[in-house]
Image 1 (cartoon, one colour):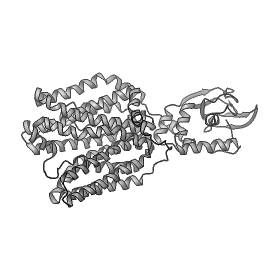
Image 2 (cartoon, rainbow, N blue to C red):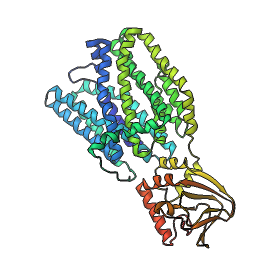
Image 3 (tube, rainbow, N blue to C red):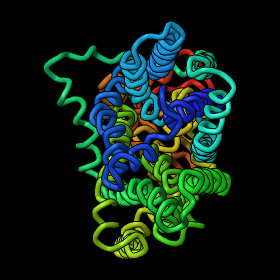
Image 4 (cartoon, one colour):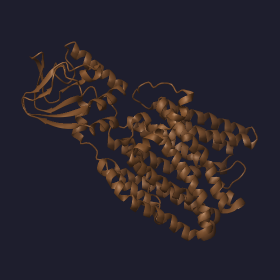
Length: 525
């Protein structure tokens, strides 16, 4: 799938850069070097300081993806990183001061911030079906896990054979490959959005927080995900303490435990591919969270794989990137907070008791939230394939992305009408759009029949799109089965997507002109 390839390449490169922690003048990873200098507390502090700046920028990065073409945001992020990595390589080759290299590396990390939320928000518009969306999220996360495992090894291998400048050059080349994949994406045209005004940036960025605050399901999921991420941050400290103080293996022990986590995350991603086609993702999410609270062998479980499709299904597209920006911010802050708290827990309880206490807290939290999680699953049943097929067969809806069709399918109202029943009456206010599944209806104007519709026909769009009274009366000629879509849902879907809006305008214009329309006989309603 194209979206998986493009986004996956970007994530693979980002994994190489994000996890590359070999300093220009040192051979030790930063957490180990911090321990040598300042002990357990320094490990947590160094880890937190690397995350907090990016966390504060994440909501604003999400705003970029909700205001500007998402493909353009992805491309700008990747090209900026190419330029910054090339500049860093040049600084190394020219023997520039280390501060310049560090500054460029920090700038590259900042340029990475918009990528994750933009990718997560763009994926639903590229996936054609709900199962393809789940698969895309799983594949992207699996590739990222592989990058986390392979990236540091590749950087270390290149550094052992060449200079740091070569590492930066390789990094730039990988980002350039990601940019080529982004260029190849075929993104449906989106509605043009108003330009950002300086005075509204903070309020606009806060829309992601407001969307989460209004949805109790999102609050439960994101709260539990943040708790899991807190444990992941604490684990960054626990790994160093375990390697040096419990296992007595020093630097090699840290590398071994980090590699074990990378392999576990990769296996967790492979297992997550089995979720493809499933609408019930809260249970796998809970199991993934528990995986961080029970013995280390289960740490490969990846609850984030279930969070993404659940959020993508629940949040409107116009604020989706900002919601993912908030999730990204909470993810980084929870990691940082976990890393800062862990040294105090180890000092107070000892490493073994701290591990048990941290893991047990997650188990208790999942138990307390089990009922709300099950309720989320009960509400997240995916629409029947028949409903999606009916929507996709209507020319007005055919251009919509798969997730938009799924969103509409969840709002369809099934109706059964007896023969002789008036479904819409000429002159009445338009409140619904109708799709005929079974039976036959007669269309009349001023009491005179003008046409009929069989299964596969649809009517009601003129009154909704032109804000006019009903232009015709539609009466059931036989017992009929219909799907109805309320006015607000219909207008939000059609007017918010340029190709769909154009298709709707073509249908309305043809019907008002008395011309035949695609898929159905001549009618007007």
